[in-house]
Image 1 (cartoon, rainbow, N blue to C red):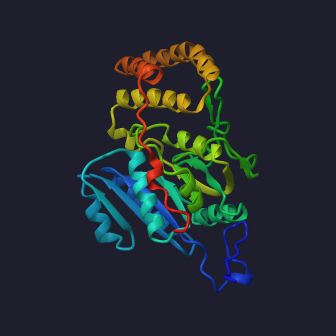
Image 2 (cartoon, rainbow, N blue to C red; image 1 turned 180 degrees about the horizontal axis):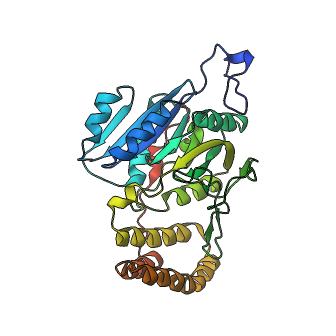
Length: 330
């Protein structure tokens, strides 16, 4: 009978398995002209105490010299170079596919403007092992420039109102979120995906834009497939938030955020739920547009309206991500 490495809740091997290699994790970063973010992120990952992981960088056609720098300074990093920026969901899928082909049992998506705690991978893997590799796991995420203030831990989404909530947002961590909990929505900023979950659910939907809601859509598909999503409070990450987005126009972000949010809801909700979501939308739009006016973001107002029109009435482009799922035996 084949022995399987035994890990405790911190991802550390028990005495019965000290001589066995723990399951391999592939950490996927997506880089687009982001050397100032990606390099420090790689440096933080190299300090990880987890003994079996591979860093994979998918470069989306960068022209800032960052791919060359990664090749020169970090030969241990697997670099996938693309000719152009084809979007975050596609790059994530390419990275996950590479990780699994390299023998990873877990793929960890990670935004490149983050800094990982040395124990993060160990805690993520430990939580997943306790869940029999049948649950996605997310860490506790702080603001990078406010290191004790929370950005994300677990998300919730109402398919009746379309309202997405992040209950811990901007709260100071005083030990009030120290219990693992099941969540409805994980953040693509960092999620650990077991191989068998990816084999069943498939990849992120590449029809989504470069910025928003592919992770929400994937979380909903994951839960519909019968898998859990767990918040692991001991796994910690610090997020710059919006680092790469500085290179994208606010109007483009606003359009894709609105359209893709509505696409996500249309894909997941029933007819009655779509009706109630549409009823709530005008109020939400007024609040958003009022905030845009207050900030002088005049170009974002027509982008919001175009996003709503295409989100509610446009045809949903469906690019089947299940093509990336590996056969169960591989």
